[in-house]
Length: 108
Length: 126
Image (spheres, each protein chain N blue to C red):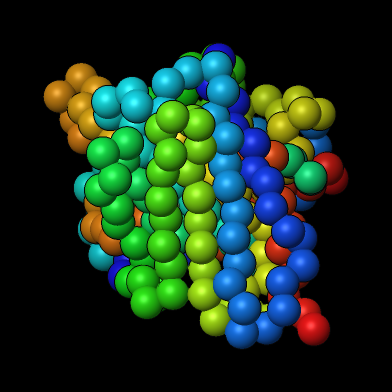
């Protein structure tokens, strides 16, 4: 099973600033990675697939990069609605599909 | 657009079977290319993929849960269901149903989960 490790666990950033979230896979997953956003009391929402492709209706301030074992989600200018928990998920080796433990993005 | 809604008991006793149903609306559960998935989230923790079913009845389960999980589908009702047997407190979680896309985009294989149901908390306790 591929283990996904996200860092940091919590990231404090001011509105309008850039946020950079990291995700590492225990072995190469090529570009087979998705990112999700989860707000309190809500289900996760798909942001990125294929490591860098934005899902439908996702704002351009969200971008993903990386391949192999190291991946990054960047939010270029944080809006108030972006403060949430973010999860990465690999789909290169399955079953099972596996998720990271999440990074909580909080207001500084 | 497609919407999913989980239903089922919020409290299950240890050693019993957890049973949940997901109702799909706004689209066909028999659409090719989509798989119907269960994912759970332990309180304050990350996400765990449980398994999926295709409209043909083909299933795939998480190996860690395989001996206890059954996912079934009723296309006539636009529903799919989860049964998890011999539950313990460790199975207490929010259970989500989701639509999984597994296919090719720009000649690249992709998988994503979208949309999701709102989730339902199942507590295992006597």
